[in-house]
Length: 555
Image (cartoon, rainbow, N blue to C red; front, side):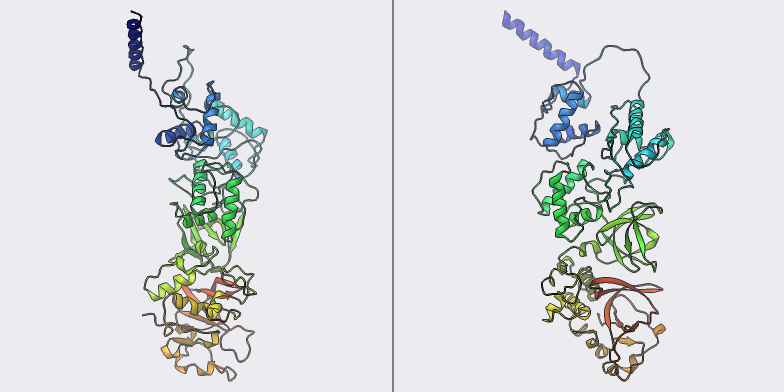
């Protein structure tokens, strides 16, 4: 009889459970993996906890579960059982006793952006952006970028007004609502990074979050966890370090970033700025939002990469006239660009996109011609192959000639290719590039120095000066090839010849380069041994130092 009564009670209890509609969740424990862990992490992220959504129940996820359990008065064991998940997912929360009616709390909108947490004591442009947003909500703060007591009080009041957890810490939920679009104002949206006084890459312009890895911010301690997880995974793919992909930017991650930067000749800051991210994701095969397009400064004067997309922002890096830079992202009327491993914003009107390999990739150590795949188009292959060497620095001894990391000097792998490593390599660079691009010596010959590069046999040379008696080599030039400067229009793929004003009387040519772009005013060149490295230059079409061009017969 007792057994029958027990069975009837169990059936009744089961019936009540089923009729109540309350969900029963499978317990999730540390080390679990899969879609249910992803769901758990997404729910914790919405609650304002900082963690990577990677489907792995690691230390970071366990810490967030413990914090949630403590906040809800549950047993804080880090195991996501049915009670924890019911409260977290909002389907099975304990019913409170009836209370006097209160005005409904403002609905918290769902934002696609994820924000790194800002805390009291922080400084920088990210804090200033938050202060300006608070002022738009009716607060009167000094937007000085200092997260002090006044800012903390304002954050607490804002949280109280919007029924958020009142702790004075601006987490993802607070910033999502604050930087959204209340009162008819358009929000800034996007990722705010933790400030860093030593930062050399922009983080003051929050950018809309994209699906997957993004290069639109500098990653460091306190940055968006899911982006840190992408960084960590890419570092592992690149073979830099063994580290946990937990979305936490700790000492191990910073060391791995620093190792990658050192290995690639970049400033070893330990923070993953946009240039570092773009190169790392490119090398590791990680899908990301970087454009990696080449552009040139065609303004005729030096320009600055700015720390944010504002004309009043400070300068991060100077880009000389005619220099080639890498476009990382497009932001309205601005580009986020990189020049010699530093990143900043530049107005679109200041640069012009060109169809060449992205310099950021080429400026990494190695300078391997294998980064360019030959197409069979001889001219395109010469230009593309030569661009892979951009940034190669000559050396003052034999030691650094192969890796291109010398202090700048005549020694180079281009000369070494011809068993002549100590010769200044402007000519050898042209010849080497031609050989690697599959061009025969009948198109571009081998030459030790620029005076030995002549194209009369191919009837390809044009020059603009009257040879002097002392210029023995110049006397060999075909007089029919001499013409007025205004009668010749250079084009990409031409070789360009210079004669410096301080040249010896017998010198015909002082220097040679490869033309990679031309417009109505300027000719843009890629030159070996230009100030000790392979670099880009820009000259007015009527520059008197330009004494000739050769148009090799590529067809």
